[in-house]
Image (cartoon, rainbow, N blue to C red):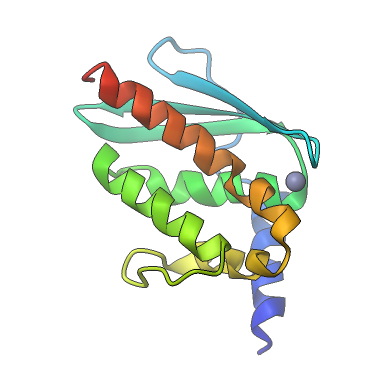
Length: 146
Ligand code: ZN
């Protein structure tokens, strides 16, 4: 099967049936808003951390298929990871979308669908927006020691 077709299917699946979508009104969740003016993407990512581990992620907002599907994929990839491991996955994802070598032991499954983004540099910001948001949230949570 044509790999780019398969990747498009994965992206459209997450766009049409986003996982972990919808925000939660709960003070235990840290909310991070991010936007990408070049495309009009505007999203909020929420995360809940307990004992150094990301136990839940939510996301919502509006944006293009690359941005919204990527938020869904990110939530599935990072829920259950400790903060240090999550940062490693985030950084490997950045390598992948830039077309750089990435760690294939870490980047697997639906995340691989974003390899094609490297061919469209203008869309890299769309693909990374939700990941930038969670990275910011993790940084804040690391600094306050929780
Ligand atoms: Zn976009």
